[in-house]
Length: 340
Image (tube, rainbow, N blue to C red; front, side, top):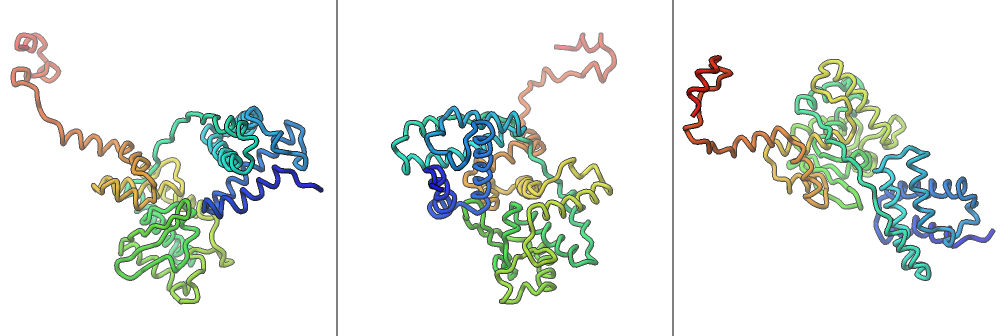
């Protein structure tokens, strides 16, 4: 069977271009692949074009817009998900501008498709008391419980994303003072994150118990399941959810209604901000490219805003206006006579 130009370019884009030239992480490439699986499914079901007959000539701006409308109307995707799918398609058609320049005009029309505005979700984080209660929930009488405590404590202390935690190996961790962990974030960019000595106690005990301090274990998964395979995102989420539910039964007032793995990352950032740590340092810890991304935590912390405003407040009211309030005095007539 003859291969179409679409199949050739898409194969090179996913297997060579993204990983080789753009240095995208395997997880990003997997997400892009999912976008094209949906796109091909749409083309087959709604445009009646079999994948073996799908060529670049079949793809226009109108087709892409129809696809974006389809994932929202029939797959019930949010604006944010729609924008993410569009970003994956844009990357492909930007690549085609150089690989298939004879259809440059059509690719540029696709690249002109606008993203949809969407409401950003408020930052969901736990208080320090909430984090403490959460970390008290793993059952330390079991090996899995000790692993769960070490993992959740490291997730909070490092502010790492869930995939970053999953990808860690023992070689990433330095337990000697000053303790650090080397994290590979988006775009495979590495950052060194300092760890609190108190938090490394759990991690050291866990690693020693599982022989992860031995040289032969350097490239093993730092956190693994019973089959010695690295945990999945679903596995980490299950562990967190179990501890969250236990903590909520003890004190529902300090455990938010929704807690995700990202909530631990948000919590660390908010606690650093409330402690007076500069946003630039928080940006570096989280691995953000721009401090503008990190600035969302400053906008979210209403308590710090209020305290900052109160601290900066200067009483500019002249003495003449400082009269007693009739609400406190109870004598409205007397208050009116004294007003002014």
